[in-house]
Image (cartoon, helix red, strand yellow):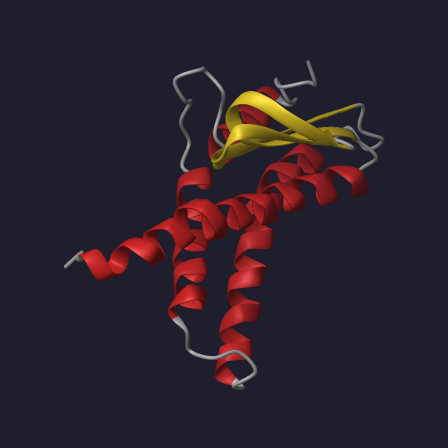
Length: 159
């Protein structure tokens, strides 16, 4: 049951943990795209742009979603595109395993913040791999993987 005592943790989850989970996810896409020689642009949040740091764009509602676009891959193969779209979820899963292992060997405490981080990471992986298009017509990672396998190329180049 949600009570008044849960409100501080709600704000921590919503404004700190969820954006970090999103950043980890997008970093996975970025790293895999860089491995295949791609040019990258990625964003955390929606709404008006607050600032840029290199290829990272941070938007006003930084705690809401994220995206990564890439272009000009050195290895422009279907499997490379699939690997890039899987990279975000793979990073989330790797971090889930690392956090759970560190808790198991008692390097990290069994604190609510780590459980919430793992929960949001699983949530993020689940919904990113579900094939759908959002209201703006942008594909989820799962839909992008489906499209790449079906059509043989990425349909989302850098603007």
